[in-house]
Length: 385
Image (tube, rainbow, N blue to C red; front, side):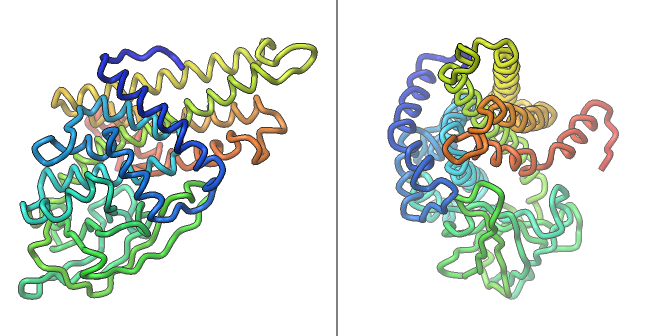
């Protein structure tokens, strides 16, 4: 809604993507698949098309077959996807970071086998980190991988895993020794070769894409499927969280922006007491506050992206962006419902769905409360967890 500083190339890329999403994708998620699971073949078709605009492919360098976009441009494009459909933004996010991880640290053999499919939009990856009793503290991961000759034998359970039902392979965070910090390793498990069980999780929202539990029961995987060095996954995982949190912030930014757009459109059309409700001072004040919060969230997201592009650490800044943007989405979506009045709680209007989705946003990639602790630790040097 507000002005955004963009280069000519960024403006063209965003505009082109926005027009495609409005014409082809928004009707699909607003009607046919509203709160209904999108079949894999349909989602794969969308991913292939989005790859042409720089989604997923932008996270990979040109030498590895991608578009090699900077982080700021990638986040601008991602905001557009989230403003159209947060459900669609989830596989974009997971495949992007799976592809980024493979290019950065996987062996040439693993890169050659699995990276091209992600870049093209043909395959899906899941990132297996969270477990039933393990959320923000990844050092407590219990899924175990033990050596048996030239194989890992992996047993455990992962939960809240995005792309689960779509996934062709899982990059699984496993404990390979009892060392809390140096005992975590990422291992690639191919669904079709090694197998794992997937069970869907039904939620208040985000049900047009797959969130799942994944069960591993003595799954045998070649040691050559180790992603990066054995025991080096903790630092890498925490580093990737820094960037993925900025994307979750951009996801909430897109949702909040869409809620604002819906509220503005409704306020300009709905008439009460002889005039459109946008002409009532309390409604006007609500819209002004909503717009300011959306733009403030965008500035925080863009600051984190600019720090990434400059090669600087942005742990606190990414945490601030995630904390503020996710809470903003809850507030703005709630206000959008209020502006719609009774219509806002019906399925005839999109804001009902946006409000349910917004409730989910402060939870993934570390809750709001965890983000506050990260910010405070950065300020004081004292860890509260």
